[in-house]
Length: 81
View 1 (cartoon, rainbow, N blue to C red):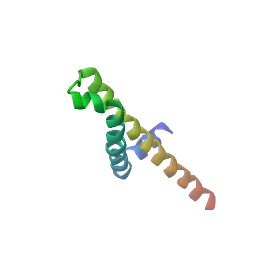
View 2: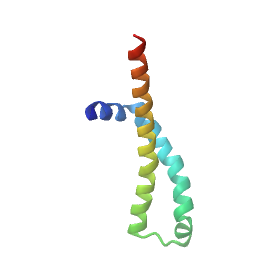
View 3: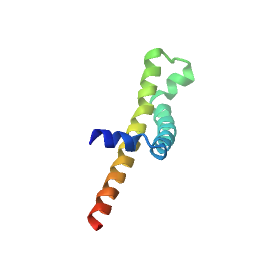
View 4: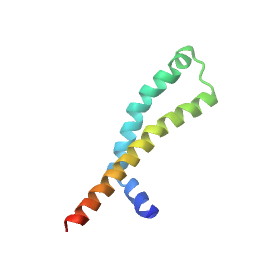
């Protein structure tokens, strides 16, 4: 079950979509949460780690959503056969 999920999550269309989501949504979130620190030049290692985690969240959400949709479609196809 987990192996199947990971295989779907690592398919290039899923990864590409998740990367785009991470870049777009992550940039907005980073600007909202860290914009002042960036503007003032107060970017510490700790803050960089937080920014990295901020990018990771939309990546994970997009991946989870894509794989869930793919699995639901597969279940639907299996039921119609």
